[in-house]
Image (cartoon, rainbow, N blue to C red; front, side, top):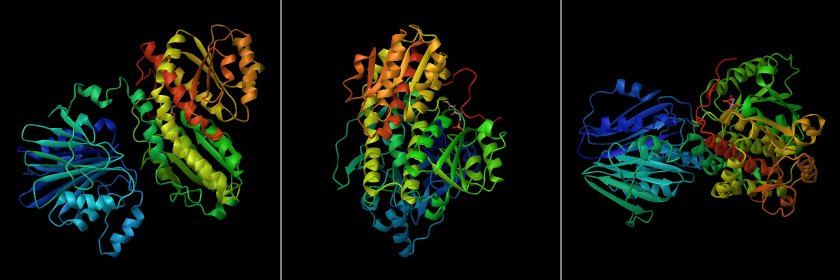
Length: 604
Ligand code: F6R
């Protein structure tokens, strides 16, 4: 995830900026840069790769005011040119977030004669600040940002004076108050070595650091009174924003990551999905005869939901294949097939090998991945990035729900191109998609119920997760999560299939999690619940808030907000993730680094 730092004080800025950036390394990044004000003007250095790379290229820079950045590529490859800071005349900027109206601003600024050198959306921020700068950096930043739609934590520096100005909307920004020196950062971890007195900025607030002063403004340039907080966390706790594990932090980030996957991609007006990165024309989408999704593990489970969506909404026959099997299966493929590899890391050897193989058949290819510039993204024609930010816990959580969202977006896009979805339906679905972040937050606010149930069953040796239709992939995912972090044996099953064998394993010692949200198969799911109840299993249902019936048949119910029937998998995912997390925590397992597992599996 991108990181921002800024410093104004009496000490040399460069070592402080580099040290603060290093404290953000754990968040993941692929390039880094700094801008420091020296007596010869702005000194800007940036490079792809590690901060140590940058450090080795730096001359002795003298200056006590500067900004720095670690970039985790989203728009534009991870190159030196795309690294921040970006410069326009006498102004430099570093930015976290996404500028949604980038194209509009780019066209406008270009017509005024501004030159663009990078592929990033951030460059428009530098030009906007430059366009409005008349000696007052705070005013210029405000004027510039008023033109921007999207999210940002951005820090600006100008050649004219020792000042750093930073602002935020929908992206974290914190100011640190020192003794005769002040700081800004995107993450409190960067500041803890220097100060524990911090001020968190809210959306549409600006901070200005100059000399020993720190001032806060709103977007009307009126001063804002802010509360100073004292941070008690140690650095390790701060990296996890106070959560005991990265996995729990990442589960909690899902209201934001789902929002980020959706951002800039919905046009509710016409009920359209805007995926400019997909170069398949409407005609080509209409001509597709088949989709093949290839993936491993959690990404495979996401792919299974894709099958329901592409077939149900867009009417395209879809197969979902385990990458390591598919490669050696003599697949029948041709140019009317679209292959969609899904991989969080973009470096999974099995998925990359299978992708290389399908290209020899002339298939079209479109990857869903979370990391820009990886091997997978270079192998395919098109990439839809999930924008979930780096995931550090080995167990995939936020990247899974973002993969689901990417699949909804693609399915609607394809369905509309194939005239299988009318505007009314797509509009309703897009509105419901937009409501998901708030609903995820509701589930997170109610996590105590999940914790209680997890503790209740944490001594079980075997667990079953049952689901039907759209919830079947989430039953698989719930079982996978529980297995990998708690080491409890768990099976995910299509509920209707249970009676064809596994029912023999059901007893009072096998808790069953029944994913029973409203929809086509709800009544059938109730029957399956009765089947396992009759054999003595304790049943924990995950059901919608408006369901007054289910509690009659089960031992406990975890509720999720009412949404479009198609979208429940996103909400039930969050519940099964928390259930797995709290179970593993109750058992004292090393949650972020489960035994025998690695975050990125780069061997076949
Ligand atoms: C489970 C998990 C793994 C990965 C799998 C594929 O929590 O993280 O099952 O999903 O190794 O990884 P990617 O998505 O990076 O290809």
